[in-house]
Length: 197
Image (cartoon, rainbow, N blue to C red; front, side, top):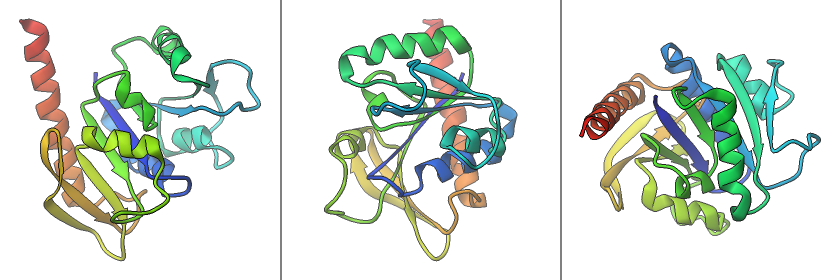
């Protein structure tokens, strides 16, 4: 099981586009993609499964990008977050490869990779949930005119991580693809070793 978290500094920064790019570039993992929201939507169920691919919603975009399954989780406050997450695991099983679109999820599970999309250095309108997620990040992602990887460009509690400048979030560069695969392989090997103890 691989778990990736994609968070972001605010609305419209490209989180959903990056999730779609990851699904497309790592198709062999047959992703379940999950958007977590704190806002009520048209569905009254806390765990709702999207069934129609398209461009009309974020979850429909996940399916259009190649996700095996797509869900919307509504966790209105932190108190009911674990219960909603349990509902998801019941629906998909704990062996699924999952990409979460959320900042808050990093306080409830340990992902193999945490990627945070940001507007740029020291953006004044960053969400507080984004600032709280930064210490968990493996890489920061910024929109730019061309693809570039800046090694060791930011510090977090894991050490130093890269900042990826990305021209199109939905088309992952070969350099970023290689980095993703290496990080996922390392994380999965570490998790298997930890489980064997």
